[in-house]
Length: 92
Ligand SMILES: [Ca+2]
Ligand SMILES: [Ca+2]
Image (tube, rainbow, N blue to C red):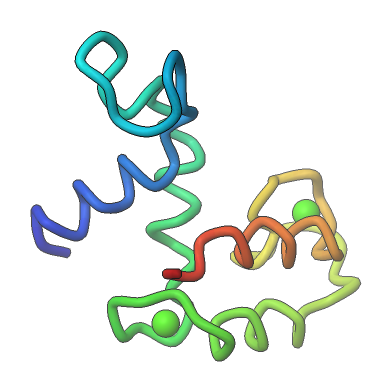
């Protein structure tokens, strides 16, 4: 993974603070390391982008209980909340 990809993931998963978007006081916002790790792992069909193919991979494991790479919110089951989470990371 390149430095540019890491920077993109860190900024995409940061929680915005202060004025909307990047600002001089908060920058991109609060760093959420766990979300950044999950986003980095969510490129299930490794091509450097998260898209519908990656969501489809996640959906294929729908209903799986226990350890799964598709359990992006680490609640022990692959369900709609994991699909919603990966959907937020699709590049717009
Ligand atoms: Ca992908
Ligand atoms: Ca889950």
